[in-house]
Length: 332
Image (tube, rainbow, N blue to C red; front, side, top):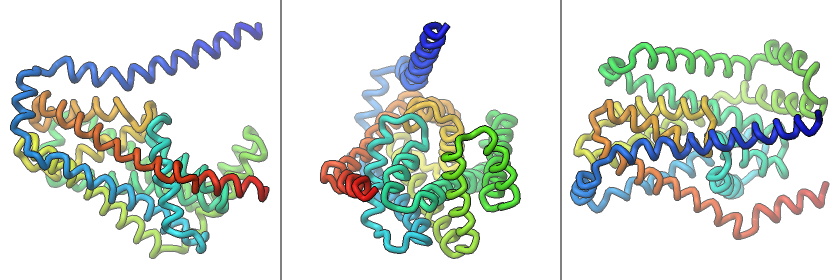
């Protein structure tokens, strides 16, 4: 009986890996099988030489994500430097290339930094940073849909349902995060089923999150920074699409990119959302009037942009992070 359970567990593990592989590779195969390659080559020949320059915007947006996290961490970890925070942030961006889920970077950087900074503060600020990112995309997306109202003509009921569910989910998450009464009831419920050590860790995070209720200026500043970095990302995408198609469609892309990012976060199936994101790009960009060849070029350039995360290997190679972790382990 025990052997059967082991075989069953192994089969399920391999089945998940197979399905994840299909989710990653399938959309690329589906997209590039539809492309007419002579048309693709003629489109490529018309691209301006500066088409790769907007990818450089990914570097400041990565830095701004780290700065936002540092702003939240500084409310309690006052001796934490920005440079050290960015080192962990960039290192985590490198690790997230191989880990499943759109939130892998946040999880990895929190794990690394929690070795030397208060556990509750690190994970509490990580949770709030993620909430701000999702809320920011929802705000940008709703503005985009309001300005480009014709987008709602496509899959009207489905888009409306997605926006409604995500909005309600975010509102609930924010309320749960800052309400001691509600989180206490949840904690008492979890205490019956979760290990004591895990419950204790969650209680530390809960207490750390409550501190931010009194940090209104920090929270507001971090949220403004969130909107700025997302606008930069939309602008960079709009410039690339303009180089490919000759049409500048900022607000349409704001709406569609927000929808894509929210879906990728809700469905953390692949590393960084690879495959899921590209499939959604193909479907939604086609509704905007882009041809499959133009979409194929954009996806290829987008993958090149992801390579910016390889910069995260620099602090790892320098050994600063590993030294910090070893020092902390020795102290323990």
